Length: 301
Image 1: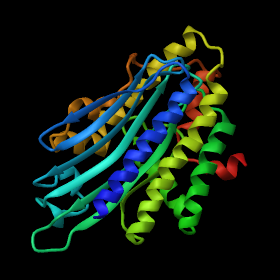
Image 2 (image 1 turned 120 degrees about the vertical axis):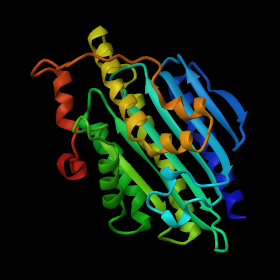
Image 3 (image 1 turned 30 degrees about the vertical axis):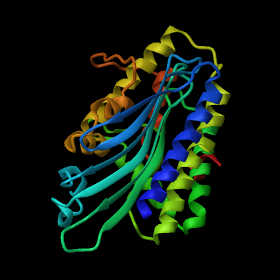
């Protein structure tokens, strides 16, 4: 069965990502929380209060439902009400050091079973980077990995999924991107099944290749209370996006998924400040230059 092959690859990917993040942290390990619900099962792995990561969550889930939720059929009305099966790995990493960016990645597989018709399957996923104190060489590295992993799958794939990421991870009420982007794709069945599966595996493995060197380079950068307070303030944007705009959060909650695992992406500490404006010319104000879609590979190469 196709679903068993995907299941195996996703579980292997969760293991690899957790091992790589533990190696970077060097002090703490992920604690596995295996769960079951009325829809299925999964394993949420959370690392807390490490030397490098304040909180890191890497979640695997495999659920089934009697009817596709509204958030999953907005672009596929013909599947409304169809039984479905979904599985995926999703992660959000909140480092301690404000100079280490927050990062997110996920890869997922859906299959719907409309009555009297052949099953309909597709993949989705991507990764994106949210720095508070951006370094251009880190952004160049991140997007170079993204471009290179897309290259074997055809011309223009990186450009298409990079733009999709810019458009998706955009806080409309703030008129700013969540970070410096990466890749985002959904409804992927443009190639045959094996090629699509190979692509999400490349995205999952590419995430580690893209993120681990940035963590290693920045995790020992000295910082003080000013940087920490700015980090906590900017984490508020992450909360805003996940609760207002994120389709994965909506799908999980609408489908009756496990709330703790769905909201695992929330930062452990965050602050909000009314009408905050960074001091003109400060390192904090510089972040605004990066919160808009840009052609990073051309600008920074």
